[in-house]
Every structure is written in C-alpha cells, then in structure tokens.
Image 1: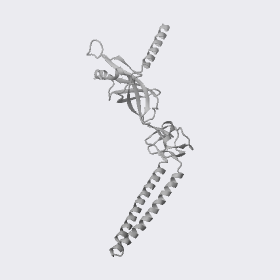
Image 2: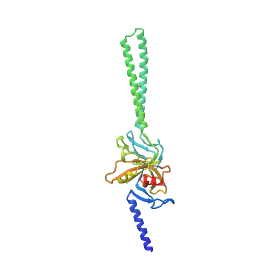
Image 3: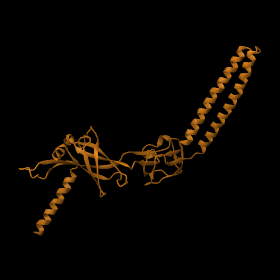
Image 4: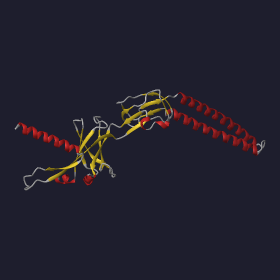
Length: 290
C-alpha cells in the first residue's frame, strides 16, 4: 500500500509539472451543485498563462552634453524621486562659456544704450534742421543693428546657461536605479549614451506590468478588462488586475499572443524579471458565476 501511495504522489507531481510547462492552457472545473439543481454539474473554463514581470517604464539615461562624468549621485538599488539628480558632467568648460556669453551680452547692452543716446541727439538736431535726413537714417540703422546684436548675445547666454544646466541629469520619474554601467572619470559624448552606453538606468518601481502569453487558438477567450489573478514567483502574496493591453500581432515562431496586466507595487516587493502565473476566468465562467 505504501508503494502504491508513493507511486500515486509521483504521478501527481509529474502531472503538475507538465501542466505548468504548457505555458497556457484551458482546464475544466466543476462548479458546486446547488440544492435546486439536478443532473450533471455545470462546467466552467479557467485559463492559465505564464509570463514575466517587467517595470512599466525603464530608461537608460546618458548625458545631453558631452564631457567627463564628474559625479554619480546614486548607486544600484537606490529609490529616487522625480527630478532627483542622478549624475553630473564636469562643469568647468560650461561655466567658462556662460561667463563669456554673459560678458558679451553686457557689452552689447552697453553699446546699444550709447547708440540710443546718440540717436536721440541726432533726432534733436534733425528737428532743428542742423543735420540731414540721411544722417538721421544712418543713426537709426546703427541703433537697430546693435539691438539685433543684443538679442543674439541674449540667445547665446540662454544657450550657455541651458548647457550648464544640462550637465546635471535628473530622474524623469520616481523609480529604482537598476544599473550603473559607468564609473566617474569616463568621457561621454552625446551620441554614445543609448543602450549599454548610458550612465544610469532607472526603472519605474511603483507600477509593474505582467507580460503574459497565450496560444493563438485561445485568443477569443482573452478580452480587455478581464479580471486576472497573478501568482508571482517568490512572493507569498496574490495580486489581481485587469487585462489592459492585447498585442494583435502574434509571434509566428511560437504561435503565441501577448497580453499585459498592470499591477501596483507600493511595497516594492515585485522585481523586474520575476516569473508570474496568471489565472484568467473567461466569459463562460463569468456567466456561470452569475
């Protein structure tokens, strides 16, 4: 008898492993028979899908101005708020350019003010017929040129100040530092910050997305707004949500269709890359429960 019991337990374990390995499938569950009903119990359809948890947003951030990475303010695993400084590019050259642009603007302002005073004097002389109209026109044109140069100098200063501000890169949203592939002292150009060339990777941690897959033959059973129960590997807690996205382009290699469920992660227990199993009750079961 002990041998038969062990043999039965082994068969059940193997059956469960095969069931999970199928990825997504449909099983028939018998609903409890009510006192008023008679005959065979109703059948309800439960679909199970497997997938992985991913951050709702993930950004590999690099410099918007070229230079040497002077300071990295965060480390992997840190939680950051939106607008929090992440790293800084060496500012020496940008501060020099800002001072030059500021001095150029001050010079342009001074020249413009002198020209305006001279033009007012020329206009007074013209009113008393002590100067020709052409001289008045030349004075007016000279002042207009200086006013335009002043505007150019102002634009140059704005650009220099913006470049100086861009030496400090801040978090675009609240999240967690997922990777920091670069150390301080490395030169970075603007063209080399995409992909693995970035300095800091930020992942949104407050909202996670379950990326799940079902065989194409079950696509009619998956609908937007359907309730989904999630069991995430390594977490002794159940999560629930609704199907928010259905990818209408199937993977031709695996013959699978992707759908997504958003989950709040206020306690930050869910990590990017954790396996997840989703249980989806289709319309047949919903109707049976009603």
